[in-house]
Image 1 (cartoon, rainbow over the protein chains, first blue to last red):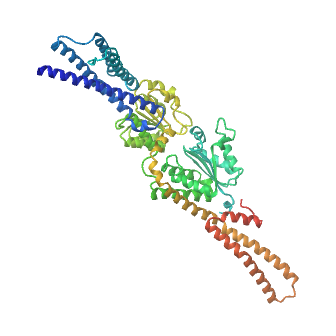
Image 2 (image 1 turned 90 degrees about the vertical axis):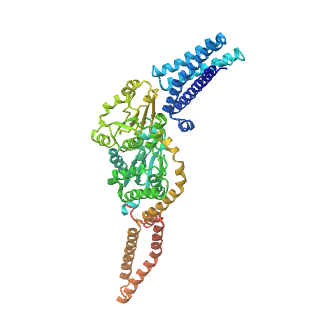
Image 3 (image 1 turned 30 degrees about the horizontal axis):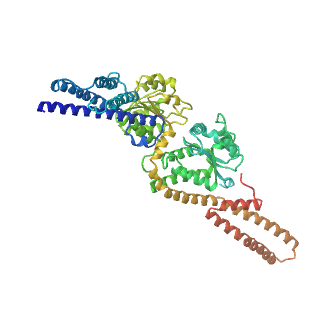
Length: 154
Length: 426
């Protein structure tokens, strides 16, 4: 592997992993938000109330993870596409992977869009974020089941 | 003072352990209602009374025989319930008598009986109750409340029962912190300008919350708080629009019904576009209609909720309970000794005077029949009658004085009056 190819590949892996990790973080923050929200709304002051972070902090964490994670993920995928075009003479992935990959990207993009452009916050934003990450997991599992051995998706 | 000793000390009331908030808020008496309520109980036979009414308790301290003054209290409270339970208001309450009643008040003023163990606000409330009822208290209850304040101070200075922050106001700060995280730079509006509102607003201000406005029925008091904590004073009607922008709304008015209703703030809160609003309702009766709490981004907490939170912070204070209880017991003994001895001296005087009157009457009758006696012999007979009376009265007098010193004088005095047909006190 040439140095150029190598850097390209490393960048793709780093950005993709970072993107997925931030999406996972957004998902966790959203889940904690919803649990803490439920406790605060129901006036229950048990372990969740005591131990979980404040609502607004979870909301901010969710927003940061989405807004930072989505571009990283997008760039990672674009690098993969470019890598394939430049060094491997085209992409070596199944059509289903591309279709579902785009679907997942759109769902995640929607979760980011509603936060940034429509200024969603709080519970609605948390649900959107959970929906986005659930789509990632769902598609990954579905593809794994449909095509065992294919692990290069996203 | 002897006119008061014949009636025992009683406390009749409800508190946070025996009655839910919905009932307590109906039983709560404003300062202006106290004289009339006490007058009614006094008219029913009590010789003195103090009414202690806080958000956690409504208690009548009386000097009274059991009936019918106690019935008057229950019916007075029962009338405040829309639908009274079968047993009336007494289903929610309790009665403590004599020494137990003294001990009860001492535990109350020490914060041992508070929902938030060791909270200090009760000390001020006991003082206010005493001052509001001063004209109707009578000397015994006067002294009882005076000593109760002393006991409260002793417990707070000699034990760690009052350490740490565990008030409803500080719990409000903790809950708001769980919604907003760092409170610095957040905004709060205050409805009401009473002590509770000021205390809670100060707690928020100490955390860096910006007090934007203080709304109250009377503007002078609102202005005083606004000047001290920042913001500006407005009328209640001017406050509703600010529910669209404020982060925290602190409600502690003295209104007898909910002032923050869905109709007033619902449409305004809709303008927040999902931004959370924390409403701390410290008032009893509650200021905020529970329907407002149903709005999705509104987090509404009443006194019971906040006190639940605060109660969690009191675990450390529990270790101090035995030391505080010891002080209460010690002081209860002291008061009871004073109370028991209160009527001893005048009663002994009265008792001896009565016995001496009998002696003199019988001596005169006997001497009339013994007119042959010489003056010396007559003097000897008189000395004999005096000595005999002294011998008879010596032991009862000593026993009464001793019992009074040990705090058991009250029962013996009652027995003495009954046995010798002495008039019961008015």
